[in-house]
Length: 299
Image (cartoon, rainbow, N blue to C red):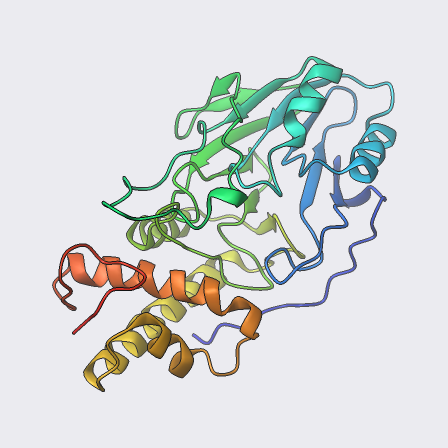
């Protein structure tokens, strides 16, 4: 199927917008080409609350979360992954509320750095993050009127997880699946083979809606995830065609494949191409000397 993105979204900065019974969304005023209108935080529950992805260190967003929480206790803070637009505010809220912080684990790359390789994504990583609970895959945490299942979905980052609200068909899909854009998969933090396997895991479920880390809901998640898989396979074919046409470097491939993409995103596009090439080299579709690298020569 063709993949159709939905860019219709009102961020309502500073407001707690009810999007389902006992679920409110608050969007950080941190728009960018990578975050769309901003990062979404979610408040779950009526009496004792859970917070999903509290967001970056942003004073206005923290004040808005405090207003939305009010006098109610917060028992848990769930963090999908350790990019700085999702996780840093967890520590402040943990100190203020006494809540337990839940995540797959601390930040780590999807693979070791190759000799001489520099991680271009270090600035975006919250390497100081440390959860109270390292939630195993498919583990359940029960709160006051809600139960949340942690589902490991590595790919965007090695420690990415999504959270399913049991009994509702709702998944908080963070940066794994978003209605407005594809997810960035950029080595060494991300892995394309892990990402594709994680999409397959989500297809095994029968959820009715995803609430992502940026933008509005994914209202037909099964069809959308199948579209994402098709889109990634088409991108792989486009890369293979460019290599066969004589493109030997990632910048040459990006120039041809991403002609209509915002030039500000070409750096991220290059890392996405690298993620595909890592997978394709491992499968024997493409060759390079040594390990796949952003400045490598491919054939």
